[in-house]
Image (cartoon, rainbow, N blue to C red; front, side, top):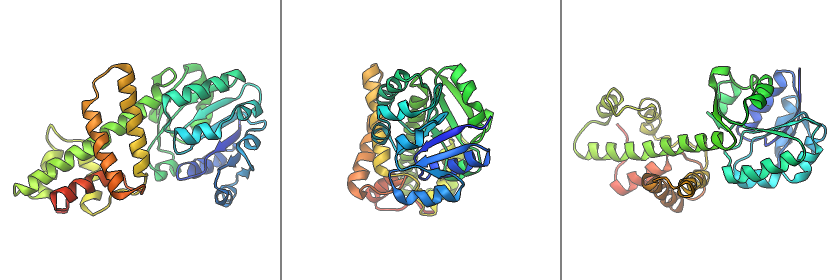
Length: 296
């Protein structure tokens, strides 16, 4: 049955998700701290609320799609959960920190609100066309209850149930750690190869078909070779996520030397370029150090 959805966060990812919820027949009331997001939300068929508490009033499902842990904590005071309908569910699609989410989960539980974490993998275009990846943490029973709503934003084969609370967030952070690590390691290899006299296009194609091949090499290097540093996510947010996952490694007592290196190069990129958008700006930092650009 159609749900009454409170959507908190109408940005790059929240806006296309809003449209898909509405198109699937759900009644959506949206809120964002930026009032200029009202018109895009209304143009998609959603109602607008002046606060997260007002958006949550009587809703069956609360969906949060905010930039990170600080915004999630600020957006979800106790009163938001108290405003939801009895038996409501909170679905957090934020790339959240497990420790912050645990506190918010306790707030939700105090009001009888079930929780499902489902951080997103993919781009705004993936969100618009229903091909996001969802990394889910929570009970199978709650996931089953949420499937009618999740079906509006992706397909069943793109929903990965990772385990209990916290596992979805950690999975998303691990994916990001490995992707950014691959990007910087690949850039170092390519810079070395170029300095050694190897044609970059030939090297890329050779690496792609070798034991060292990766989706980054096969899919994302073309953008870099064209001078596109992927301005779809903020360098400061990348730093924050890498700090969260390296902190989790410290807390759990696992090795994190390589993760520390990946974090360090992104911290230095942030110092160099500032809080701007660019998922591959750490590569730009390496290019500067080498005195050459990775262009075939």
